Image 1 (cartoon, rainbow, N blue to C red):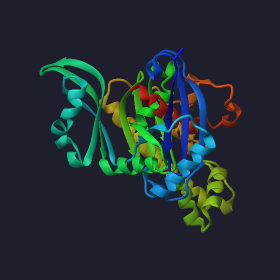
Image 2: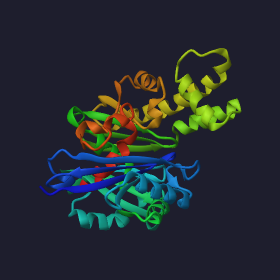
Image 3: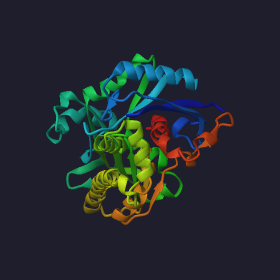
Image 4: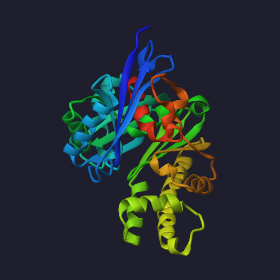
Length: 353
């Protein structure tokens, strides 16, 4: 049986992660359950990636070279992701035409909808359905508009490591591909990836993304605030954050730090909840469940806080639920940390798009 291998590369704020999936006959779009062959990560120096965008290409390229040497990945071809507040995603209906022609026409059809010049943007369209309306046959879908320089910065860092980016995917879509499996593929689910400085919210209706937002806040912002308030180093502040959690009673000497954690968590949760409210006001289907991933999702008490604020059940995402794991892969090393690698796994799935 012919097989295809695809490597998804997640460039985060604190580390780079890559996941290599092996697909059977039919490739990523086939029916064979894919196999996780390799997965590895390398930390990044603080400031190398800021707000979801590569700020120090040489530092990121160096980390990627180390990742490839350490992880022994089979290929240098990769699928990379983008997702920050300089990437606009919105639902849009357009007159029907073959998809290649529709994508070519985007600069002329969407200029007035963009907060940037079409010349400065990379445009894509993700079709989700078709309707026959008063103006004839229409395509329903998601318009993606990314500032050209934010994408180029990531691409150049990848190429600087000797890797070949074969596709640039949206992180929000990658989350859906990685996690909308089994019963979640038949429900309306909000997937929330809480990274170090970017939180991605994407709402999927039976496996089809209907809304995507990037929020400029994450776990590292909480750590920085604790460090500033308490006058301590970042590593100590990170440990303190994990010790305190959200909504727990703490010793008097930790009260100031706890107030910082609770305040920043409340602000983030409120932004997430407002995204849910916006979706509910504009769609007939209500959200049935919330699935959280990313390092920030492991802050003690955060899931319960989000569940209480949204009045929805919240669970940790597991991208391995729809995968086989190669016998050579040390699966036990990831126990409890599965949600950290959802983006890398989902980007590998993106080759099917």
